Length: 180
Image (cartoon, rainbow, N blue to C red; front, side):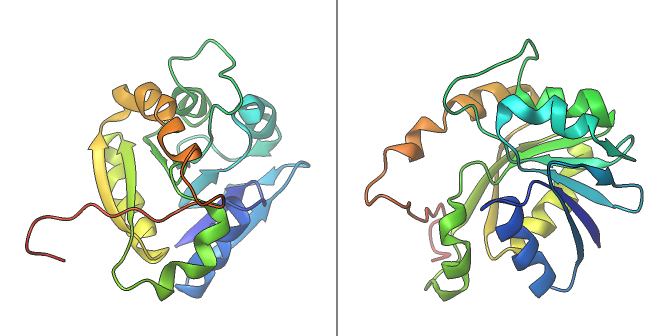
């Protein structure tokens, strides 16, 4: 799969490394933008307040399935129903909200875990298959917790993980009884 990450920080860069290791072709774009024309899917991993600026510097996003990994920290900005909807205003295609509830500082340790950690996400139906594949390829088990209409609630719930101790984050796991 050809993936373009918009953002090269701990989330964008960390996922790019995991996806390359899984055999995907990944192009990382930074503040200067670039071209996503050849992408099968794009990942937006910039501060939530910078979504429009970042996507405005990237060509070829129209019609691309997108995974929005942005967060509202420290405060929500803009008039869209959610940051995922702001992304969709640029792509006009299915969007998922994922990886915003995972700690980028732990990406290098995901493969060392006794059981695969979970990754919660919400998504338009048209983004589910690619999102679940990329979640698995990053070393997590996908857990769909709703559709894109719940993206704002999902974004607002990030506080659940931000206060977790120890500092630096934790993995979380949701499993069907008997599957552990």
